[in-house]
Amino acid sequence: MDAIFSKIEEIAVKIDNLIKTGESGYSDSSNATGDVQLKLDIQSDIIIENEFKNVKSIKSVISEEKEGELELNPNGEFTVCYDPLDGSSIVDFNLSVGSIFGIYKGELCGENLLASAYVVYGPRLEIVKTIKGSNPVLYRYNGSEFAMQKEVKLEQKGKINAPGATQKNWYPRHKALIESIFQEGYRLRYSGGMVPDLHQILLKGGGLFSYPGTVDKPKGKLRALFEVIPFALAFKEAGGEAIDDKGVSLLKFKPNHPHDTTPCFFGSKYEIEKVKEAYSGK
Ligand code: AFP
Image 1 (cartoon, rainbow, N blue to C red):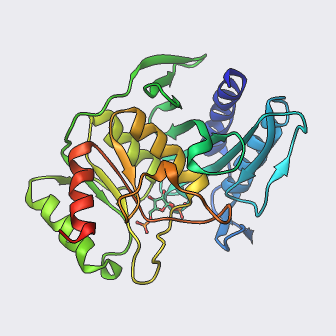
Image 2 (cartoon, protein in one colour):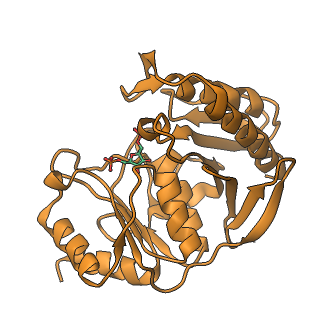
């Protein structure tokens, strides 16, 4: 696991440099789920694949940018599922974006996620690493290495609300939930990038991020293996929770296909209780 985490640090520095100096704009190709790819998406994906090839413990990888699983080392133990550059629609406007990694052993499902990491490319370059069973840890790049900053811990309740998806397409119970949270005095914080939005909630000690199922996309937008499950581990180990629209932990999610999406709610305990009440119809 150490070898994977230190490789992710090298990758983070390379992608950060790519974002700062690379070409903006779209390429001529689309990814596995039909999204038109940015030049930066493609190049970030190439950086990660090339770096992971040299890590013997990585058996295979699945990228959000590609259709299937790619075997790298037949004797390796782990499968790393990653979103090379999340937030394509905001990177060219110079908002913060991120990379997300889930490290699985065995069948690809929430219960087999052993560790996760995400990188925030913002005014600062930061990584949060989470190993199952221990608190997430924040690291910040100081120009030569990632220096440990602190363990990430959530309070029981936060103050910010990050509601995703197109409001016009929200179901009535979701609309009522979000409205009731704002009525309690929560402030809106939503950039359109799940990495900085979830990072803010984790570092501020609480709040709610939701990406619900909607009338047009009943299974939501965010992908389980690359995006949702890795963050679910960080929230759980920080003392919060991450659930789907049935109130089930996202760490129990079993995708049928690597690119499956799921409605998702991440927060501290208080907000997640509110989601459970709203969605159970109580
Ligand atoms: P892009 O990679 O297409 O910018 O999507 C980013 C993202 O997957 C995630 O980072 C955001 O939280 C979410 O989409 C925002 O989606 P909405 O604009 O529909 O709320």
